Image 1 (cartoon, rainbow, N blue to C red):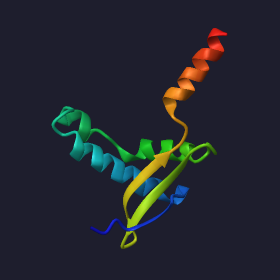
Image 2 (tube, one colour; image 1 turned 120 degrees about the vertical axis):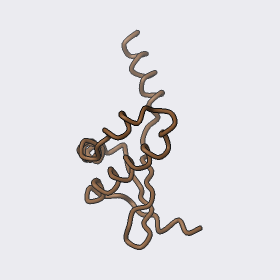
Image 3 (cartoon, rainbow, N blue to C red; image 1 turned 180 degrees about the vertical axis):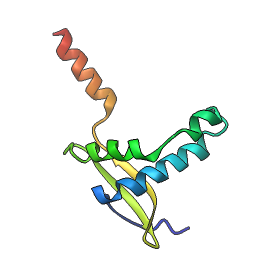
Image 4 (cartoon, rainbow, N blue to C red; image 1 turned 30 degrees about the vertical axis):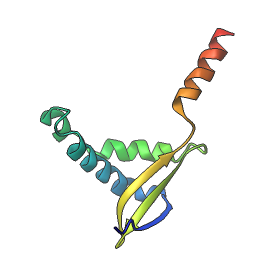
Length: 93
């Protein structure tokens, strides 16, 4: 199995990653979520969200590229649970 070449994602990848994300959701969750919900998923709002993702220096994204097409992606950043715990502790004390 060829996983493609892995590289850092850029903002230029936002549209292609967003389209892939919607397709993956529609395929992976077709027996879990109603078809009406999945068919209404749009890539454009995701692309806008991805643009904001790159503004956070604590986060990064990788893409796997095969034949000049993004076939996978991975977003990384601080664990959300830990951040919530820290914020809770700051609030309590």
